[in-house]
Length: 331
Image (cartoon, rainbow, N blue to C red; front, side, top):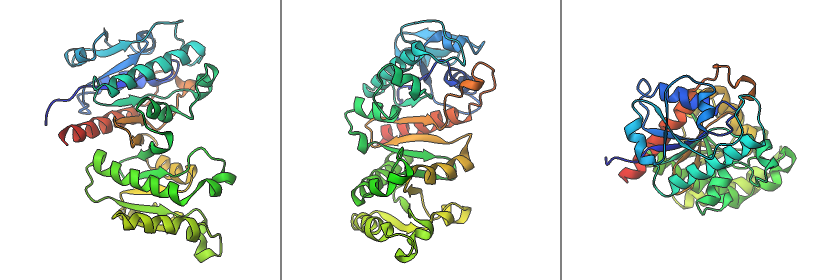
């Protein structure tokens, strides 16, 4: 396998735990066999929460040379001093600059993939950020329509894709369409092959109603919306079962029968993944020309600067991004 470029890690909100978990991931680079990476953000945000070695670099290619002795950081323009646990507009600007630069480096192949630390959308909205989240921002920068960028949450024993994401529960039945399910199913099958190396991926579709509607007795979405999508995907050669009763889809024997679960709405997907993999769950975006992952947790401003942030999910995100980048390079 040919050598690939290092990964770019955007620091997220500098007042959150992003700088700390990136630094702790670097400290465990050998014990956890992590690929080479560099951070993008404010160097002071790392120094404020960590006493380890940090080295500013101007060229991502220098990360390989520096990585063994210090955390390499491509710095964005310094603003006001960073205070851990105290988000502000300056930190939001820093987070957005970090994301923009890191995504650009991945898009130009100066980095083999992008790992994004958590941001505060509330703070970003104060500076005019007009996206539901980082996923949609990165998709646009990659020239991909928002609806074609698919969020998968992945852990060691479960992968889930929410078909609808940030929709009020009352609006989910209207938002859930046959075309949307088919689009998510296609992207999931392709992503499992491209980024996870699964040649013949198996999908399972969760019903939206209790007991998957019980043949129409508790709702007809399974019959009128979901089953037609399953039939279309099967006609394309995709191995998919369902719609299934969601309450029996996530025990160990059930999980062994599929590679990813397509879930009708946000909590149907996120409750099982966070129950099973709260500390090592990874958000990976399918459908992009670049590899993009993120730890599946927030900024945790309440513990920022206390040296208590657990880096497990960041380490998992780095490892998953590195593996996906290597598979793409080999292909």
